[in-house]
Amino acid sequence: MISVYRGSDYFEAQLLKGLMEQQGLQVFLQGAALQGGMGDLPALGHLSITVNDADQQRAEEIIAAYEAGDYSLDDGD
Image (cartoon, rainbow, N blue to C red):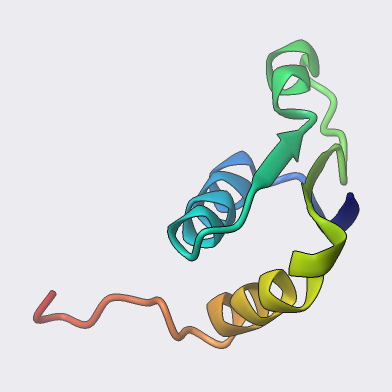
């Protein structure tokens, strides 16, 4: 297993996880249970997405496409 994403935005992590799963990747989101225990102090980088080593390149391509806006919705969507 290899980590392909590290961040603190729960919704972004869930979105990326879903995009990867739609492509048939086995994805694990770690640190999500810590979200409620943070209190008032923000913790950075507590979420990580891991995939099988063989899926690393495809997962990184999906993340790059997401960051480039390839999955954004148009006004007509």
